[in-house]
Length: 403
Image (cartoon, rainbow, N blue to C red):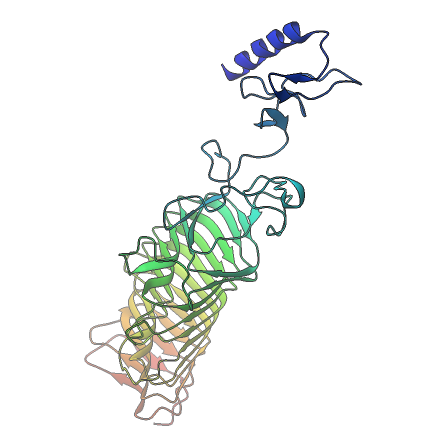
């Protein structure tokens, strides 16, 4: 119907304006056609009832190249929308002429847009929430009080190299202001999504820096996360929380900060096949809390490979295993009360170095089918390994031990 209206209108305009040259009509300057006829609906010519030919859009009653501004009602192909604490689009009202031209129509003028020829590349806005709808590149920079939300996102990549989310000095209230436990970055019901290069600094009072919920195939790579104490002096931040998710990966990343009583990375009982590869994890809490774990893995079939874990004052477990069928290969745990806590079945651990805690490996009562072989369990204060109760059917052998 839209094409019919446009064709009919073009025919009408062509008939009614045949032989006329450009000029001023009703106080509005129309495009000149001194050298060639300007076809209504064509590039640089008048719009026809707000319509233009092909991929052209109507801007100021003239047909031009470009994409709808992010956040506009017709922006069905936009990469993402940003809203501030009032629910308004912070990109609205951006200049579109002269030095501040917005060539790619993403709502950000050239001086602040790292690639003004690509509508999928744009900066964030302090105090805003970015809702991601497709693959995007976030311009490098430090952004205050920003949240990123991806829901029902499929086959997309979020490139965030050089992007820092910093809450050390908030410039706007939380959105909404009466909710404390939020996530800085949330993936919910997403499939085959990659986020790369993001840094998160000085966050507090959050459920997690990154939440992955009810998703598959999410990959977090090359991120740096540092959590802080909250306003009451409590260290209750979490790093990455994974719930109801499968076949997802966190790799080549570093997480540090004040995580007393909370896991830096955790999975729930409804998660499966989570891969944690080449990570640096450190709890910097300056009190001996004796609670929580650096990594808590519930669910089925998780993989932990070459993960380095350090605790300043002693979490209860470096790695706590629940569920079943997990594999740990390589990596190290230092200065944790119990380096590895096994409350899972049919899991294997090899090639780990666990030192300078109280117990290298703690085996919970009733578990079975686990194999702990080829690990270095020396230099722990009380024991290389300890059975916390009857646990037949487990193999603990060929480990280096000095107790």
